[in-house]
Amino acid sequence: QVQLVESGGGSVQAGGSLRLSCAASGYTYSSNCMGWFRQAPGKEREGVAVIYTGGGSTYYDDSVKGRFTISQDNAKNTVYLQMNSLKPEDTAMYYCAADHRVPCVLVPVYNYWGQGTQVTVSS
Image (cartoon, rainbow, N blue to C red):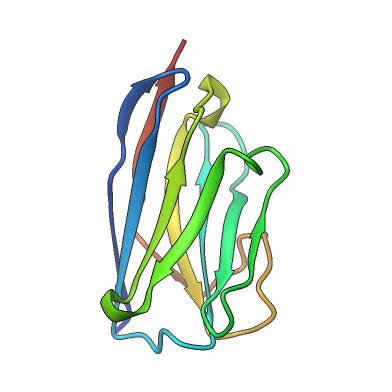
């Protein structure tokens, strides 16, 4: 079965950095979409960044573009989210997601989801 294991969440002060990792197993990693989504209490889940593993194309929500970077390590079946210049509004539960369908989109319609990892940014 598909399993997405996330790590790297935590608490940081505004301006700090975190790197989230998502290790995928039981999943055809190539030529698929993987991404990061987040959900704050009382808000809808929103797309942060996605990557097309077949070609490496990446897409970011405007709110994080220039601060966050999604990348992949095919040898490890792992996707990363490097988060720099964190802001309090980045505070949310961050979820790794995967889907066999393409093209990749920044909306939470993916078939597979990780358990979530909490990111808290204090001011």
